Amino acid sequence: IVTSAALGGIIGSKIYYLIENIDRVIADPFGMIFSGAGLVFLGGLMGGTIGVTIVLRKNSLPWLQFADIIAPLLIIGYSIGRIGCFLVGDDYGLPTKSIFGMSFKNGAPPTTYESIAYNYPWLDISNWNPGDIIKVFPTQIIESIVGFGIFLFLWNKRDKVIIKGSLFFTYLVVAGMERFIIEFIRLNPKYIWIINDIIGFSGAQVISIIMITIGVYMLINPPENPETKEAT
Image (cartoon, rainbow, N blue to C red; front, side, top):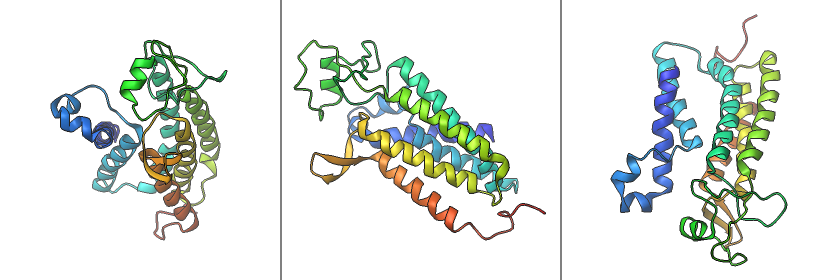
């Protein structure tokens, strides 16, 4: 299971990254495909889920029960992973001049004026000058803290599961909400515009909406099969 989750997660995260950066893939397919960068969590979640599902079905193991077991572990892994993002200076938020801002001079990529302008050309950084070290929202730490809180919430509910799968579907809802909200201050391009150039949704937000929708639907309408009820 662990091996399948790891392989599926790596492949899924890479595919997601390549799709989100298709223009760079076209320009340099070999470099993008075989680079060590570009492991996106949501893609890894989907790929890992597929990999684990294959193993569970092959061995006739209960999918919903295993999903409940792994739900708290997914979010604590996400929380710890965001600490790594913070240390490497990646996946940070929008530029800000507020007291909450932090700079990543040696980040990947660094938050220098030139780097921001090159890597995120859609951003308006007219309030800064060439040569400036730009402060950004440290969304990695915010997500790490929130993710740990979600972990504690799910961990405390793990012994109170009545309908199998409910803990995993709860994870989909709360994790989806966390990612959907944080994306408004993260440095990700928007693909679906609600209000032109003012309010838009990123790819991660679209997936978050799907996660929330599936989670809410399955909590309201749990699957009717022998696996859903605890043995009496």
